[in-house]
Amino acid sequence: MTRKWLRWLPAATVPAVIAAGVLAGSLPANAGDPLPDKSPAQVLALVAGHRDAAFSGTVEQTSSLGLPELPPASAGGDTAWLELLTGPHTARVYRGGPEQARIQVLDRFAERNVVRNGQDLWFYNSKDNTAAHAKLPAGTRPEPRQDAVPQPDRLAEALLARLGRSGDVTVGPEAEVAGRAAYRLVLTPRSSTSLLAAVEISVDGRNGMPLGVQVKARGQSEPAFSVAFSKLSLEAPDASVFRFSPPPGAAVKELPVPDHRAGDTKRPGPNAHGKVHPKGEAKVSGTGWESVVELPAGAFAADAARQQGGNGDAAALLAKTAVPVPGGKLLSTALLNVLILDDGRVLAGSVPLERLQAVAAGR
Amino acid sequence: MLLALAAVPVLIAVAVRLSSAVPPGRGPAFLDQISQNGLFVGITAMLVAVPLFLPLTIGVVAGDTVAGEASLGTLRYLLAGPAGRGRLLLVKYAGAVLFAVAAPFTIALVGAGIGAVLFPVGPVTLLSGDSIGPAEAVGRLLLIAAYLAVSLVGLAAVGLFMSTLTDVPVGAMAATVVLAVVTQVADALPQLDWLHPWLFSHRWLDFADLLRQPVVWDSFAANALLQAGYVAVFGALAYARLATKDILS
Image (tube, rainbow over all chains, first blue to last red; front, side, top):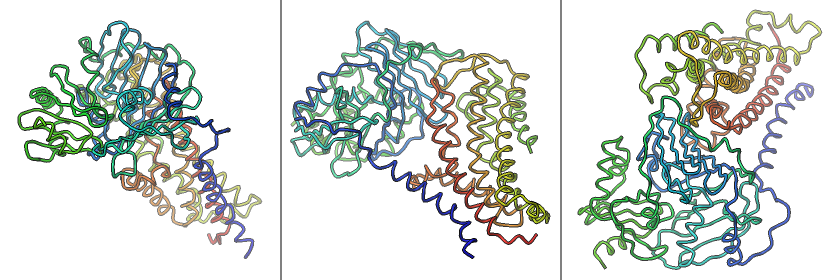
């Protein structure tokens, strides 16, 4: 009888060993010495002092904004950015210098690429085999904004520049991101009206490069938006990564030279990948965490119309999620409220509806 | 059984050849690329075969291993010899693994062959937009077949265990195939996402990562680890079951 039970021993041990291995792997590994204590100002100085190094890495992005999940890569062209706001995404980021970058958004059986090499900027979508090309004026920063997952270091810099001054900055407990020890900068708004509860930025303890960004919304324990490196290598990627020519048979579209100055100043929320329409002049009221962006009538309508001509994902999403409120329609997410007024104006900001309505009324 | 698998790429190639151009974005991924490049027949055929066809054949082969001998009444005689039960199990499993390796390679090679006959062969466009030459493309094709072979090794171990549970081979086959389908259904339910990384079918379709430039090896490694876990667990279970079983037939 005992011999019989002995035979079952391996069958019982193997799952136990696997479970132990998984548990051991999920424990936070203590990566050597803890980082020296630093004040918030010192960490900020560390970030400001970091050089734009060449690197290659993998970025994981998750968002729970309360938007319905769109099927991955269903949206092509103009509405692709919208799909990036729903569900998780993985992207590989390569940077070879100030004018060389490549971002690959890895979808299932498809991939979206943004390649910048010198003055050439390429977009490629394998789903419908389309490519777009733009010639950038010399000296522009490599910021291929739409069609790609945000890069943690760029996003962190933008957030610090916009929110750092109007919020409190503290240093939280040490974090580990992509296997590297990191300081955790916590930005909290001073005002109580902002929808944002906190923005956490992980900063590499050694070279000051931001490794991850988490945006927390009020009343939500899970981060509403998070993007961070899961793998990072600080070696310069192979130059062949940045050489891109559209594959044979791809439909290539030549884009007009993008005007970066127009698109730069009005990004209200950290997460508003929002399409800022170059034609309409946007107006920003309030500062920092409470800023509200107002797009004049027509700017958004033109956009929506064009998208309806396309595959209509943005319009469909809008119809599905916007709720009627006095004076217009409200698209509410965990981090951003967008008020579409009946007269066509659009107001967006990380603030409650009442504040948007007050701005709309000109108060 | 390999012949039945080889029929999949032939069917796809002939169907595409006879029909007019497939618009991009319709049907299984890569289908629209076949008419430009025959090598994609192999990839498309594997993609089509992964959810049901391959697990079906693996289930039949692995489910038959021990239960088949038992139902024929030959298991007794095999164990009458000096070879132990552990060794018998090992040999039977090796046979199932051999089939799991042969099956995807058959689809890939037959697909590439029929594609080369019916369609032009040229540089292959990867998902990343880069193009590689036909020789490297065949290399990638074989890599995908290897990925699928690894993917099926875990299922073969599950089938082996099922086969030790019963003397009716059809029961073991059906149980294995049903399990393969059920895990894929569970993998599609977002409510069960805590379970997903533990399902042996979770990474079956991630072979597309081998079509990127540079290749994403993470999924290959993670898949191999996952399948190794299944082989260890169900191998041990199968051994325990067979070693303690009263062999009556």
